[in-house]
Image 1 (tube, protein in one colour):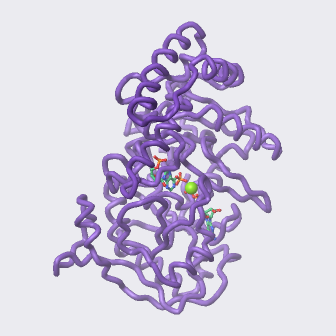
Image 2 (cartoon, helix red, strand yellow):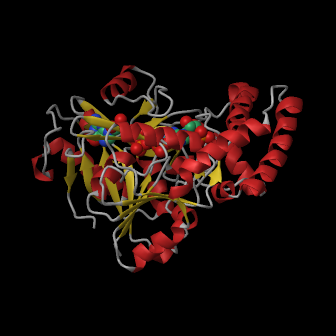
Image 3 (cartoon, protein in one colour):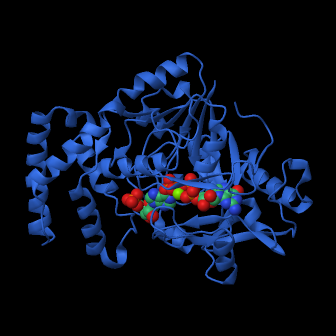
Length: 427
Ligand code: GDP
Ligand code: IMO
Ligand code: MG
């Protein structure tokens, strides 16, 4: 089956954008299906750097369709800014399609996101404040406004005015802050709708036709499995399904249409935002990984929390996504360490466990059990073939495969498109 899912198998920022861009060279269609512009996918081609938030990472090729599927929450302001930046960089964005069902993010969603984070104080989630949670709340509550609705002005006006009246009550009475003028939002969003009209369609038809015609479809995950609203480290999660199953609902495709499921996995672990992180390093090693890996958020610029590779976690994310392969990212960042540790179990109340706990209090008490491997000193950023990697790097990859029971089919040794080692053809 020529369709491939790429999901983040940790807490996001695993390098999904880089690997999607690489594989998109072979694909016909690239599809986003969840999340919104909380995502930040960095792609570097030769010496040009691109940051995608809502835009699928196949947009750098002129001949690919780029789909924003129905499961995405859509910020028109953010999207149009992204279009403007890309066009200024000389990227043709005419091959982008947005599903008419995507739920629209309005200014009140962003404001409520920020107000709620402040209200939570110490317990804050550390959201990107892009309005993601509040927009998905409206969708689930069945009061959200979908993009297609913006094209019928009268209908949109009545939906928006009633929604703003409700939100203003919440913002003014509960949060004691300042509400919004519905007419102002209406005028601004009508302007957005005029620009967006040409992109809006029923993308489920496009994706289905491509699959039926055996075209190569690449499904691009945003966020990471442990940020999944159901299966992640709840409540320190996002509000969508960044797992492989999320594509069925978020792009309107049957599970039998999905072939390979590749987990993008960093050679270590990072996390932004709050919540327990068993292998987190609070020492010089953690700082060194952050500096070498340039671990600062693409969307918010926040420093990422860093730690060793966590096998227990990846075993779990492999199981719940049905991973058929791992794309091991940022391996070059580990060059130069004398010893490299990987977590191969958790110690919990005197017992060794191999299942990632659902209960956060339990997770917070888990102490990683490490396997220590010898590192390698060589710079690996220009290596093109697996055979040419240092022996200790190969041993590290093998240890990951043995513990997770998933083959590492792709190895990334640098941020550029060209710094990619393919061990087994994907399409
Ligand atoms: P995404 O959200 O999963 O697409 O990942 P991000 O783009 O937020 O973060 C990954 C970061 O690592 C970006 O700055 C990439 O340019 C960079 N990157 C991706 N692959 C590699 C790699 O193999 N080596 C290095 N050094 N950097 C990489
Ligand atoms: P990409 O696609 C890393 C995190 C936020 C916060 C939590 C909830 O670049 O991997 P939200 O704004 O979604 O309500 O925030 O989820 N988060 C991410 N962390 N990478 C991302 O996306 C993320 N998107 C959201 O930091 O902890
Ligand atoms: Mg990112």
